[in-house]
Image (cartoon, rainbow, N blue to C red):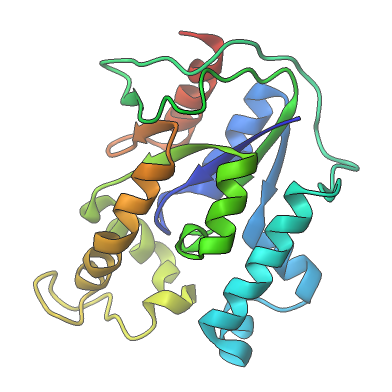
Length: 221
């Protein structure tokens, strides 16, 4: 069973885009953060508060391992219909690029679309699990797009890794949301790009547009 993972910084829309794309593809969708919350019975901020980032990454890694190995994928009641053949294609005007040919062309007769957390790939164990079991689509966004999305309805306040950043501070301020994102992306950006089989540049696109680009990757358009 093929597993494609959506990767990218928090605020790029992995969950919303993933749900829409999975419906279009006729495959199951799993949000890793939601799976952790379901299993732990606590929100992500509550988990961070109780055991810190290191503790959360350990839970995240264990959950990911169970999902990707030993038949742990929770598919009952999820949409697994459909058959999509073909592989990722480069598109000069669609924001799609093949970033990594080491895993070859994709074939998705049936499978899973998995949304990873923004920090999942910062953990070496999780990164190795993804390398072995998934092909990755990086939803790449500019600093301005990420900051705007995270400000929407106070979204930044619910992200433990953004604690202390001031959404109201000027972008050039050292404690601004933009400064925090830029600092984190300096480390995470190269990790996302190295893991990516496909990169989609999502600036200026709504989530349904990006979902259609994902569909096009598998339909060969």
